Length: 103
Image (cartoon, rainbow, N blue to C red; front, side, top):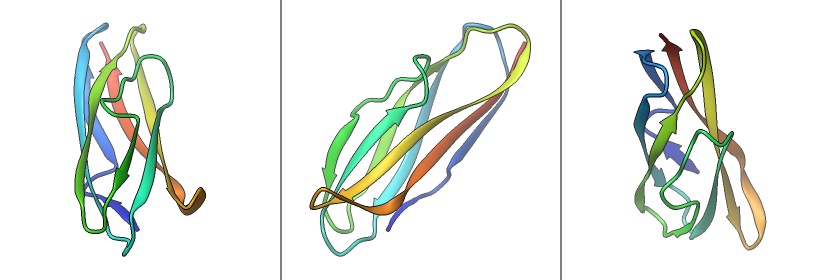
């Protein structure tokens, strides 16, 4: 199983067009290597390494930036992490979330 220390980052109030860094820390708790695919939910989210292999017990970080351009609104964005072993999904895709109030 892939586990993350947190799956929801809450930024609070953020100025319009602010570039917000994010970091999700996780660990591969399977007893075999897995391949993860990281897919941002929209074009305002970037990821440092969209695909990689994780060894058993390996700790890892998903980092990037979220840049939001919007009028005053509360918004939630996501990144989906797909976990595969031997070309098959071995875990329900994981949604990592960001919530912020654009001011």
